[in-house]
Length: 367
Image (cartoon, rainbow, N blue to C red; front, side, top):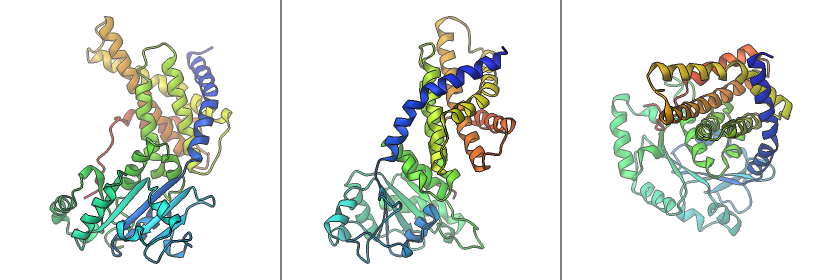
C-alpha cells in the first residue's frame, strides 16, 4: 500500500473516532442562548448595521412583548434562542420596559455600540458607554458612516473620537453600514465586526450560534476557522506520540461540521472522514515535508532535545496551518454546491495552509 494511502486510512480512522465527541459539542453549542444588542443614537445607523449583518429589516419584525417604541427586541429563530436588541441607549430605556425585556437586557452577551462619525462623539454617548461597560460585557464600538469623513482627516478623527469615548482601538471598528453608492458599493467593515464578535463569543461557545444567523456565510465562518487553527496549533505541540493526531483531527472534524451548520447543511461521519482524508493525504504530508525542509535549511534542527523541541514547534505550525486549510477548503466546497473535486479541494487547501500565519489581523477596519 502506498504511503499516502496508509496516511489517508490513518486520518479517516482518527476522524471516525472523533465523531462522537464532536456530536456532543455541536449539540451543546446549538442549545445555548445568545443576546446581541445594537445601541446608539437614532441617527447612528443601528438598523443599517443589523441589515448588513443579518439581512434583517428590523422595522418589519414584530418585537417581543414588553418592547417599547424606543427599544425593540426580536427573535432571530422561532425558539427565541438568539435575540437582537435595538435601542438608542441603555440605562434610561431599561427602566421603562417590563420585567421580561429587562431580563433580556440584563442577559446581554455582546453589545455593539454604533456612533455616527458625521456628528462626532457626545457626552451622552460616553455616559452610555460607561453604563454599559459597568455590566462587564464585551462592547464593540463602531465608528459608523466613515465614508462621510474625508480620507485625509480619518486617522486623526478616529484617534480623537476613541479618546473622547475612552475606547481601546482593539475594541473599535470603523464602518459604513449603508454607504453612499458612489463611494462604496457594499457595506464597509462588516467582516471586521463579525470577526470581533466571533472571537469574543468563542470562549462562551456561542460563536456558532451567532454565525448561523449571519447574512455573509463566508465572513461568518472566518472567525470559526481562525479559532480552530489556533486550537490546533496548541494541540499539535502535545509531546505524546499519537495524542497530537487525535486532538488535531477532533478539532478539524468539529470545524467541518461547524461550517456545514453555518450553511444549514448536515454531513454524516463518512462524508466528514472522506473530506479530511482527501485533503490531508495529498496536502498535509507535502506541507509537513516543506516545513521540515525549511527548518533544516535554516539550521534549526541541530539534534538532541533542542531538535525535538523545534520539531514540536514545527508540528504546531503544521497543525494550525493544515486546520486553516481544511476550513477554507470545506468552505469553498460547500459554497460551490459540493461540486469541487479532490484536486480542486487540495488546491484551495494548499494555498490557505501555506499562507496561514497564525496571527489575527488588525480589527480596526479599513481607513
